[in-house]
Length: 197
Image 1 (cartoon, rainbow, N blue to C red):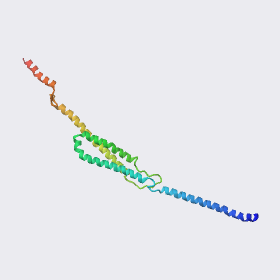
Image 2: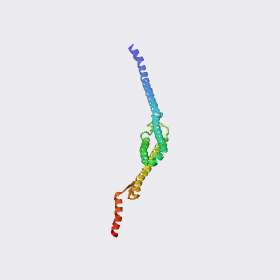
Image 3: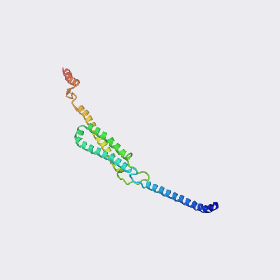
Image 4: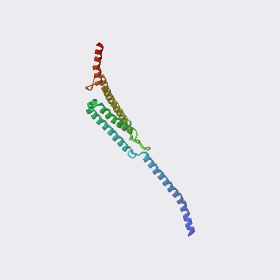
């Protein structure tokens, strides 16, 4: 019986060896194929898988906030224009408070809130990435220049007030007689009278 078993088992062992190798080779090929599909899926990831959509949503939210700030400022400027002309110090304070906020929003849109496509992702073209921050920065600079205009108006008003007092009659300043000049003006004719006598 042992010889019969050996006679039958040895050909089976010779068949099993190549079959195991073939099976292992197929498993290896299947593993490589699955790995290739996984890599391809990662490289073809959708923009949502790459957080592109949330980055664009954040970028748009900050852009819309900045646009709202511009709209509110435009409406306020429309109603406060006469007030700013009468009191330029309120005008330059208003615009110089808003200008840094607008400039900061522009810088943040160019840097922190700028949507970026992760490596291995295919993201759609988003042309507003550079347009919105540029416009925001330009509006911030415009507000700073408008604040400078009101600042210059305010400084002219202060200097004009000083110049107005210098051009007034030295004997009367702010409705009050200047006692020292009045005394000198009265004493001067007496000196002339004494010279005559």
